[in-house]
Length: 275
Image 1 (cartoon, rainbow, N blue to C red):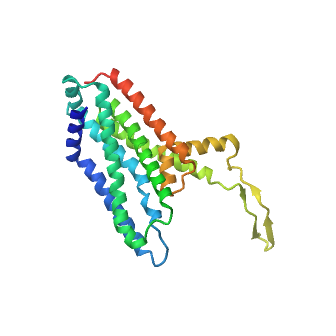
Image 2: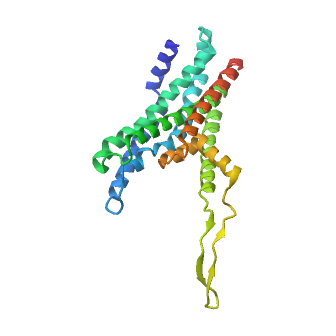
């Protein structure tokens, strides 16, 4: 696999989508801090509020990058050539997976490092304790690997680069909107507060506190919460807000997604007819 890794990393260094994604992360980090700095007279900001913002975007960037990076191997006939010279399909799959995982980490650090370098002098160090920050970093990297595993699965099984790109990008957006919907349902208040209002006749009336019919309870609430903790996009929302509900569930879910997606991908890729 050493030769496969050498070939992949050599191509990664010259890959334009990879560098565009990293430049976007750097530019967005700088833009975010300039925006916060210009508002610092009206609001109080801490470094914690911005350092994990990349979690919301990394899945979208990876959807584009992974599809193009692996799709190029198909369009150029590289995968077929690797098989002809004796590399196993499992080795080819895992090499692409690990290469894309590395690329995902680089994208994360392309946001984190400028944020720390510029943000610490402007806003000071983290207000949260270092152990919590390291836990959030670990969870964000695990989430990134889960994204990569799912995106690699699609890209390795769809030889058409355009189709793989559409499926991956659209899939990430659908999961992101789904996670946002789940979050909105979980944030529903248990009751509507009482309030006083004036009627058309000018009289003062009062509405008593009443239960919210959309508030989730029992097993349904547990199911929604589990999905929000388990989905990579749900984790992205929680990590951006620095409020992971259950870090253990999130970490185990990310690990499970990586193992299941990679296992299924390898099994199907072994049987795939490479054109």
